[in-house]
Length: 638
Image (cartoon, rainbow, N blue to C red; front, side, top):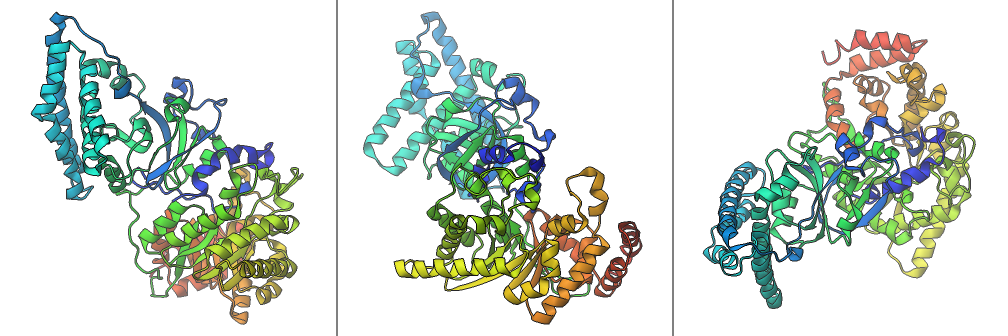
């Protein structure tokens, strides 16, 4: 757990930039932990693969973290190790061969042409059904160039007449073609030059000398993030058995054929990264956030652990649409997303879920030593709302304790960060940070209602002060003539024993309540949920927790204040039975767990759930609750 290590925030900040402002190969939209940031635990199994270590760069504990920026070509979020494709036609040396070697060069050329045609034909068949037919026809253009008499004659002429080595001959033909079309400045002709370059590269890839130094290298990865000079179809789809998880390039057009295929296949792609190949090495580990054009190279293992849980793409790579959530006997249940990045919000839209029930805002603050600007925050929050496609979004205010090493929020690390100035306590101590976030949220919600959830609340005074700051920021925006949200709702996150005991007072002050199940369980039971010796407290909802939830439901109904819940505890198979049994009807679930959560909902029978929850809440200990789980789950849904 970071709070037990030194300066965990320095380690997290170094790599969090990649997801902080994001929207897989095959859409790897990776959900982050629903827990508070200081509750994440580094996982030693997340180190880069053996290939990376063998390369001498990736996976090294001493490899420096590097953030690269470029232009987004195809959105998405993924992680993996770098594989370089850095052959540069423009820098190919002008080598010549002896007269008696000319025939060998010509034979190499025609053998490579045949192999390239076969590969393109196989690739076209492989992509059938994965991309629209009109986009797959892009490959027909490449097949045509491989048979083009002018291209073939020009290359053969340079070999025969000037005794150029094949690489130099191809480079010269493509370079001349490219220079002519650049002068014309016609986009269609420019794309033809790019296609011809791809064809030339594909031919060169099949030469025996290139295979020896590139394709057949021992330890070469089969799944990787490609780093290349230019965006190229030949590099994205080269050898059967390989899978390109993402693409980073120094150059390439947003409208190129390679870009079109990258978007169709949902391969996260970023181009225009200055000095890319001077910055990355074979085997470097990368978190690629193509939606925001950011890649973090060699992040700390703590940061990798934030994203590794999310690497669970569906078989098709696209989240399936979901039917309206309801129980086995037809009770409608509200299910929305709990997200921490733009890719997750995009997943929710694909699944047809109505908005984001809780959006965690921490990662954008973990990027630099200084806090993000109001402008950067507003742009990010606007993108979140846009990705939600009109659905409601509730933003959780920054929830960061001193273990994260945000010097502008915490000058020094506290002895026990988890019980120190966390959540709203920290924000009220550093009101400038709070006010900047509130301003950004108001600006980003100018076309609708703003919903804010306040974390780590203990009493109504904290809520009232947040409301005062919000009012003052709204007034300031009005004076400046800046559009902002006209309507706001302020909710409280119930995750401390004090908030639970004072829930009725807090509910009167708040517009809605949200239960942080993981935090509430941890604090009520004084049990670190990352401690494996205490895992039994979290294998099922503890009877004390169930009694607390039942009390919150009663307060919510009495005061007519909406109540919802979020947390990893929701993903336990028996949790929906107990939670619905105590009266909860609204849940915020991380995208990767939505399908299984709704499947469990459909097994819930209200009558059985109420009896089970009542019996579990009356249990005297967790062991009795676990026994009860086994006895009732066979009847659930009958």
